[in-house]
Image (cartoon, rainbow, N blue to C red):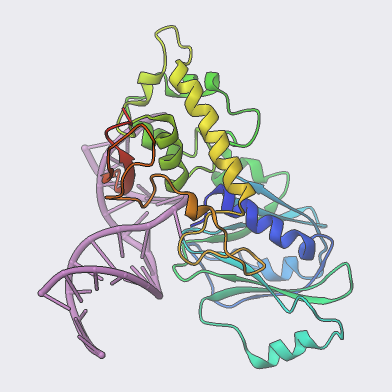
Length: 298
DNA sequence: CCGACTACCTGCCCGC
DNA sequence: TGCGGGCAGGTAGTCG
């Protein structure tokens, strides 16, 4: 589920509890997710204060007072939730402990003492275990293999039509694949690429280079696409993340962007563009589903 | 170097 | 009702 807007939503949901909190203990309930947890990870985190939560691309960043950062990637099915938020007596946390409310897919449990002095429990759940969790010295993180090659954020000023023109100029690969490439734009996933292309009236099958003029400048259509990428991501964050099926915000409420999908998961539905009488199709590109209208997306 | 493909893992949904 | 097949938000590794 988790594309950039969902990770941003998770971050915002966790911030009130986690920022400024002291980590009492970290329980890694299995040795790995997609990769083995680094040796000593839980011990390094215990006793530290969380100085800030951040996000880069689809990674959640938990900055610690010892100069390290714990990094969480949600993979396809990861989520974070907060338990025992209202613990006024200071005893509820213990009760939850004893009741063993954890399920088999609750892989990471972080017990905290918040700035308000109350006890909190933050839990990472991930049925498919495609997520990552590791730590790194914060000044080293940008140079690690996961971060070194990441492209620009779609939320900031670095995403411009000129930047994309440079990245797409010699790309004969499909627009769909180019937009999913985290080395170009970091944070887009299958849903928002489909949505941005639908808004732009661009076929996901078109070669990326066809949006660049011979002089290397962006075409008007690439300029429009750039704006739609920024818009769709901003709207999804505003809506609290999309969430297919069961994706929930950290406070347990559902994101509702999914009600706004124009193309993604709309196979056989009529195209929602007012001037179009086409039907959304599902095709497979690079082994992944693409949803688009071949009538108005050219 | 790049692009295409596969593997990783569980759960859900559909058709038989 | 049970079972098999296909599919799911992502990314790292491999291969050509």
